[in-house]
Image (cartoon, rainbow, N blue to C red; front, side, top):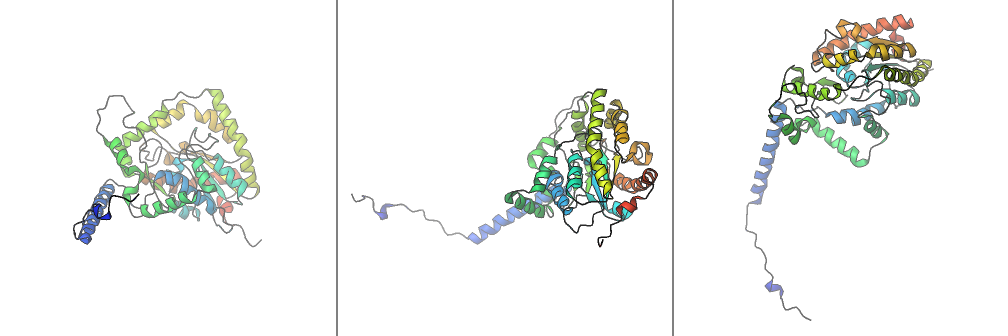
Amino acid sequence: MPSSTSSSDIPYRQIPERNWGLVWLISAALVVAAVASWELKARSMQHLPGDYDGYTNFTTQWAEERRRLDEPDHDFRVLLLGSSRMLWAADLDILEEALGTRPLQLAIAGTGPALMLQGIVENTDFDGLVLIGVTPFLFNRLDEGFFGGDALRWYEGASPSEYSGYKIHSFLSAHLGFLDDGFKLFELIDHYTDLPERDGVWDLNAGEWKLGHHYADRQTDMWPPVEVEGSFDNEQILAFWMVGLVRQPEPPEKMDEMAQAAVDFFSPLVEKLRARGGDIVFVRMPSSGKYLDHDLATRYRDLTWNPMAEGIDAVWINTMDYDELSSELEIPEWSHLSRRSQDDFSRRIVPVIERRYLEARGRSIHEVIGAPDRSD
């Protein structure tokens, strides 16, 4: 049956003539102005280009650094393992000057070093020196911890879309400060909303707070606003820590179990590494304030540290025995070193390691660090 509607009856919208080039130009100018304004605001709050976000540092960047150790011609002689305190304590440039070689930073925040060390000892030919930062209790977690699972997944191989997304994000982050994960709009609203405070309440706006700058080689420095004791950002970090610090101390038998589990896990790895010429130095990282109070109250040193030091044939250094490595340093939020104290710690720890290693092993650490003759 023929249609009763002809093509001439169909209405067409007439688009008026416009200077579309000018429209596009104005639109582009507004976008550029908005992005520039947001970028200037980010930089004014010390969110800077080249500062990769924490999650990227702890997972994808860790995986890329770890793969460098799998290269047959790598020349790494010193590795840094542990959790966030080792990240914030190590200035890689200063350590490179003091040790004669640049360390490979493989510490991960919120994660013990157990599985990372195991993978290195069992799956690589590394035969140099491993410096392991010990954070009480977190060190004794022999599992993936908070970020270890994602870090290992990225190391074993991310999907093409994940990898391409990471590369694009990394490129843009090198030029735009507002991509910092601490500068997300809704997190800014949540963090800086001016809510009334109650005396004695620590959990203010507690959540994920920016603690550091993270750079391409995993050099990590404390974020300046957190360094100011009593500042809003500093207080929020303290509030975040208090969530975990209110827990009751572990009973002595549990502390003993933790120590023995660590001895059983780490001893074979130390022996295997030493058999091929390498070695390990365990360093109890400094703390202050309520973190230090908690460690003292739980008797971590007597019940866990000392049994581990006796049971694992390695060199053990407790920074709390050295004022220059503990009480003389700035630890603004009880757990991590300020930028200035990071430099001081990096300069001061190497002579202590050299002295303690010589006393324990009867030889210099530089004999371990010295690259082997590859021609043999």
